[in-house]
Image 1 (cartoon, rainbow, N blue to C red):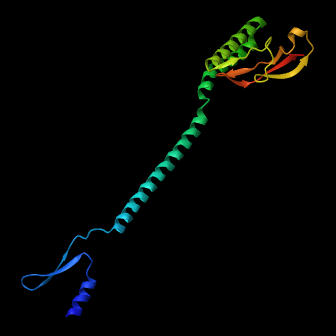
Image 2 (cartoon, helix red, strand yellow; image 1 turned 135 degrees about the horizontal axis):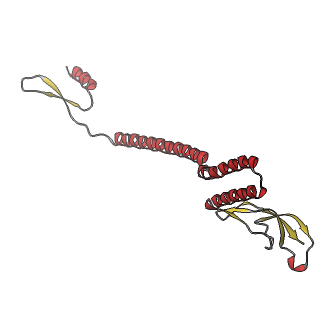
Image 3 (tube, rainbow, N blue to C red; image 1 turned 180 degrees about the vertical axis):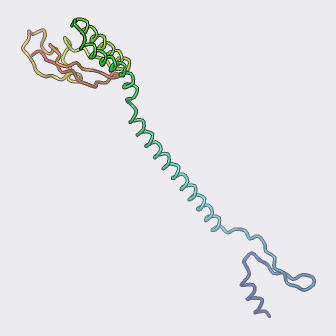
Length: 183
């Protein structure tokens, strides 16, 4: 009988205890076993791993979302400038139609000058500025020398003429001025 009880005990869970009741029947009662240090560490590791995976997934989603937002911003970054230039484009179309019927050159010239001024105004509102070069000392940071011409001593190293104007956008050079320098 002793061997039988040992076999039964070995089949019972670790946290179960066998007791005998008053009427002689055996009863199995489960007791709460305190988790071992190893079980606690396994639980903590599982929680930390789960937390890490969730954080990694959240970061990956954030990265993907920002990449998508940047792509959308790049696609529409010039939209406000283009929308501001549409009225100028309309004015050019009207001027071309008016040129077909125009008899006086001066009125056509005046209309084109108005359109040019309107275009310059729109670009100035968006931060574009013309650089003044003629009469200024040559500066390789903002000028591109096309050629040099002999000049009197007081004009040496200065910009004599401008082939193409230079422009700055929000105080950053976007096009260097192509100039002729006095030598």
